[in-house]
Length: 397
Image (tube, rainbow, N blue to C red; front, side):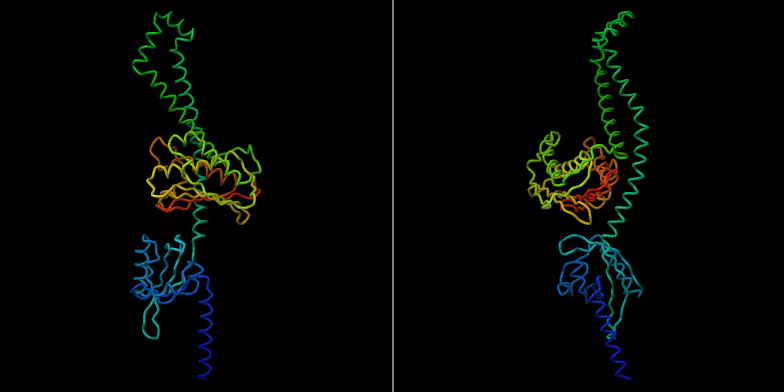
């Protein structure tokens, strides 16, 4: 009987060992100081480190600084109250990137009366990314409807303002015969009236009204483009060639040259060896790519970097989609900025420099117009990477 009991015990232990060693999730245990007393082999495939190198280390060395207080509170609760815990946090991969993990853990007391917390950590990075994209898409769909309504409501009175400002300029012009005739009929010297208007700056004010109206009109056009698009100009194009064309446009763009030299940026090309063909509205995709390149160039120019500015362009194919990466080594952005970067009117630039619509329009073009995706990875001081995916030979519209 004792022999059968022993055999059953070892069979049970063997089963658990097989489960632990072959689990896709990380299984671990922590002592009360927060040091790892056990690490399953999955750590290597999930986070890149050899388990032996992690064993004995403190978990705080791997957790994002902002998430450590929450993790400390959860582990303290598990040890003190003997309750199951669940926490989601960021943990650093061997390659330096942060991954999102969710851990479930319980307190455990072994036969030697040693107390640890045993946990199972599951990588939820991809799930959170998809949830974030879905939430962003829902928000942008709602905002696009609001943008269209606002644009149409504003467009009519704005058009009247600009037209009347232009009419005022024409009605005081001495070059129009009708103006001189009416002025003579009422006994007014039109040249003196015009001199008064000029000396008091009234004509300049009218000019400012027209300039501001034209700027507002441009913003409204972008809002309308954000909410709807045209299917004209659909072509079959190689994304490698499109990127090259946009780089050429950026190098000769006058508005860019006024503020910073695109030619001083090192452009690193990591293109797929073969052409990657997609059906796209060429001008719209060029607009998206040029906007991202401009933002990268300006961010690097506006920040005192202690390294040569560099933009890396990558192309490839994954899961039936063309993948385009535009990565810079600029100042990067914090998480709060990254989460809002595609919102209409959100901008980190000074007032009057940008409208805050460029990336929101880009989002609409890629997701609504081309059934693709656009996202950004970034950390302060480590640059930003915009990733765009487009269906291979995809549908547009």
